[in-house]
Image (cartoon, rainbow, N blue to C red):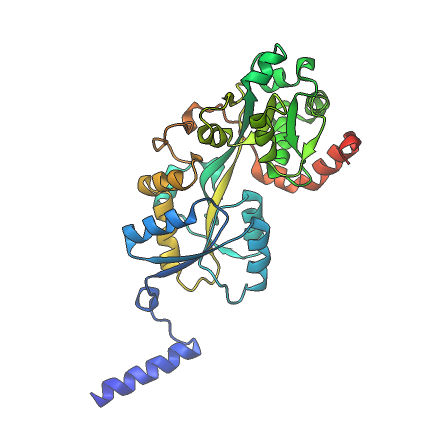
Length: 335
């Protein structure tokens, strides 16, 4: 017994010194900490605990705040998982070594366009750009519901379109860069000149244009996930449009944080969030379009039914400064 105790004492010293690694499963408690930029985290945490027994603690913040915190905590991170936010921030985190690769088994259900090829992040849902149209205001102006980007750029909708500013809004940057991808830059910028001639004012946030369409201040708002506002206001005269000539979207990812204290629990959460069960829970928490072909909740569009543009996240992320500069030069009225 004394020999065993002494051997255990020596092993403990070696672990402390970092010369001998005890398997993570033997060390990990049933606990997980997350930085979250996603709706309904309480629901997600409760359902994950029911499924796995792992207790989840979380701190909500924006993508930019997560990046700042991870940089400051790189040697000793305060969380195991980064859940939700803009994919551009996850791309940057990979470059800086702030996240760890993990190719979850359920990640095979996600299209390659919505995940990092090396497994550093995987999209759990999509933020989809569409139109929220107010039927009453359209009728008062004798206007039809615009079903395409081309229709929205028509002179008929002059001063009747609300949109956000790409200097402050991810929705706006996806809109501008997405149109450039659809049409190519040679034709895309002239088209944007026509479209933005119909937009008298740009809001700071991406959600504001949808609210303006809801109130009837504008006939059409270019908005992220327009179905969410329509579903929340069933008696409002709203029509949701996903443009027939190309739907723009970007993934909201999940990542394991580099040097996580509970890496096995983190990987378990990533895989669960991409499973059919987890995808349904995520829709209950925040009714976005899932990145897999799981049956969506009522009012949430099916991934397969959207004419998604093959948006090149990596390219347009690297071109952001140039595109924003060109936009500001072409549209000084918004400055």
